[in-house]
Image 1: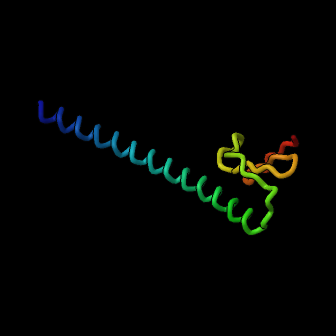
Image 2 (image 1 turned 45 degrees about the horizontal axis):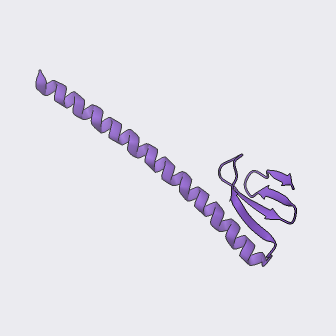
Image 3 (image 1 turned 180 degrees about the vertical axis):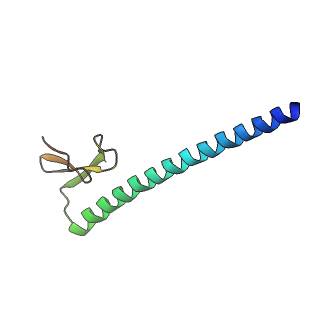
Amino acid sequence: MRTRGRRSAGRTEKERQLQQLARLQRQITEQRRKIAEMERVRDEMLRRGTGSVVYEGVCAECGIGVIVRKNDSLRCTSCDFRYNL
């Protein structure tokens, strides 16, 4: 009987670890997507050569896009959130 309990507990632990691994892989994928978006914005700003565009942070609306400030407005590069200052 004890052997069965150990095997069952072992499978449960393995399943838990597999679920945790899958969750961590999803988080890594999400972080890579955010980094890629920030790098794309940085490259775009460097290519344009506009010194008036300033990186402000990650968009709170979509969580992916980057908020940039140009003159008196803020905008998200992903979800097109806009705000005039």
